[in-house]
Image (cartoon, rainbow, N blue to C red; front, side, top):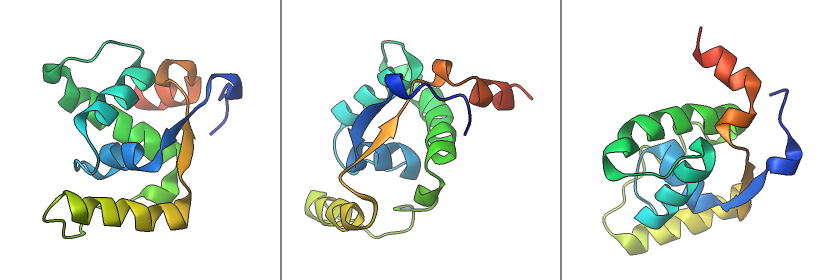
Length: 114
């Protein structure tokens, strides 16, 4: 994606990002709030999560298309399974990935308004 101001990038734990891209709680709610607040630039309240998460998922997958589908179909029964899954994904994708606030990426805003 063009028009990304790399000076605004922040590294996030892969598990925190996978919460957003998979639509599943793999780590904890604090991670979801942190990612969504950073991406949107807004304080996040519970009622805002569904809409913000949908926008954030599309945005994160635009930035990191390699995460498409990761974690959506894996069977996870408990937190131990989730922790194991995230650890396996970190071996593939790395411990962290960079994100940039949505409002600072003009190409994404333009594409979403079409």
